[in-house]
Image (cartoon, rainbow, N blue to C red; front, top):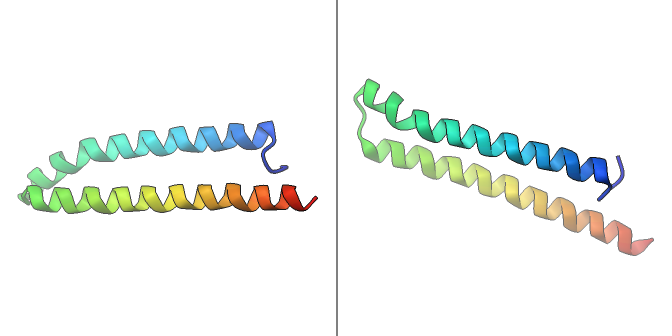
Length: 76
C-alpha cells in the first residue's frame, strides 16, 4: 500500500475510529470496575492518565509516519 494513497488513508481512519471507540469504552468501565474493587477515584485518574499517554504515543507514531512518508515523496 502506497504512502498517502486513498486505501492508506482509509485504513488510518478505520484505525482511528476503532481507537476512539476503545478509549470511550475503557473510560466508561474504569470507574465502575474500580468501585466494585473498592478502589478510590485516584486510581481511576491514574489509569486514565496512562490511557491518554498511550493515545499520545500512538498519535506521535502516526505523525512521524506521515513525516517519514512525506520525506520519501520529496526525495522522488
